[in-house]
Length: 456
Image 1 (cartoon, rainbow, N blue to C red):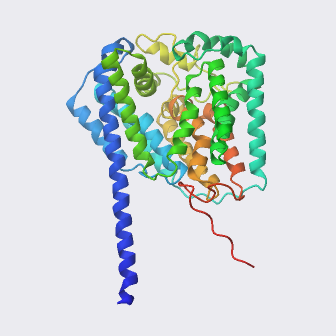
Image 2 (image 1 turned 180 degrees about the vertical axis):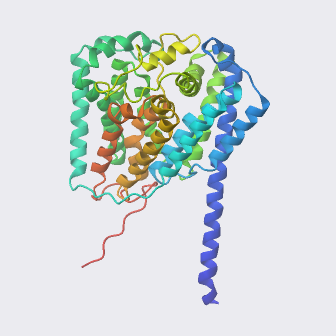
Image 3 (image 1 turned 90 degrees about the vertical axis):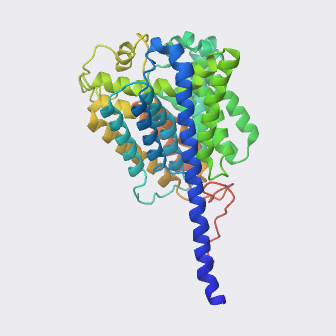
């Protein structure tokens, strides 16, 4: 009898594991489809009726709408459904924040199918390359202390620079008034190398310190750093900065749940429906305009706008950034202004977008695929650098802010340098030394301890 118990037990365990994986997959797929449906409802009931003058027209075609749902379903089956490593969350973030809204817009108004499928090909390439094997990354002894010191000094430098340049005279915590201050304060603080230091301080160093404070259970430090992040928002009028403390808190709250990615999908659904409900009941457009139109449909609109414009104009070929002294830029205005001027009712706007759009701007289809390959490798690098020495949520919270910018509003070279992806990965490598600490060795829950090495 006992001879049969072992194999039967292994079979039962494997069966339970398969069932659990299937449940995770179903939860994520259902959450994704619910999010897509909520976006479609918000577009029909709010975005199109109020913002048609900005190009958000409603021209539903049943076949195209069905196609959009089939694509969402197929891609949801390919995205990792569980939060076990940082790449799982980053891939789900790219899918939910960029791909699903783009497919929602495609279902509600006509766009070239060739452009859409090129974007999807780029996303699939990211999925594939993010799972490629990489060599084991060695860790630096004493790196954790060096990372904390560098981050602390970086935050102080950013704060001192913003204050010394008169940033407090522009202080504003009203999100509705940020555009009245943003250009003026940018002229004062975005000067030379300090523009990089400021960007790193508010988007990388302080966000990393907030995550590390929660990891080390220094909750008072987290509150102080979160308050400082609001000060950075008040000075710079960059709305995204105000959301980073909540983003870090959300990742921290989900650290013990392998269903976290399904939770994110359902949370986004609830956010869209709540904003839509506030508009329907109280006739307040601001929550839905910010959390639905601006967060999801404006980047989706930019995706198609970049493809439409550069599909019939000269590619930029990296002549706009760090290589501009060496290469000829083919336009008289910044490409963000060109795209803004090409959109209905948005002349003069500054139209940023993520790497799937700017890759096409740089080199066409080859640029999309090349960018996707690099981004997939960067995501894989985050997993490799954090290894088994950090809980997944700490590694994710350290890099999530600059990756979010890369996905939604920055060209790849700009995100690597100005917005700090390269710096955040470096910080992650430094803190990944094999020094015992809270949650070390736990990949997502923070409850698993690494066994001690054998004696001798």
